[in-house]
Length: 198
Image (cartoon, rainbow, N blue to C red; front, side, top):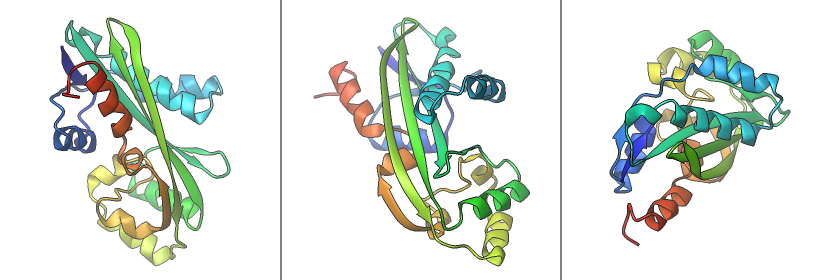
């Protein structure tokens, strides 16, 4: 039995590696934009939305091998007014997004699903609430201009393990949820399945 991560996310791979979890990373083949449009049209709550995307990512690499646990993950950012935010993609969009989040609290949901033999064997979810400090226009513009390209592919447009921590005045909840994986729950399941020693 092996664990396949249906992603090449550097943060998720680093978490698994640091926790001593043997795994193979395979890029998922999901058309994420199309899948998101379909799910939004269904009016799913944010938690269900994250689980559905994680499931779809895992299913997209089922071909990768039999006798494997396939791990799909997704993270959703929900503003306190209920708006779901996506990856900013461009620096201009990053500035707009920061302006909307400045001085506000948002919630990150991180979902993970394991598919085994084409069936959901396990799913986990954690969340964290993050409050951004009030950001000046000059700070937001400078932050976006200096941001590494991978920041543009992060929900919220930040990585708290680097300069992104400067955006916040308060953080509550799971640290691993912020990084994109309900790690504690996942480790418990992998021990239960015998992939890790208990």
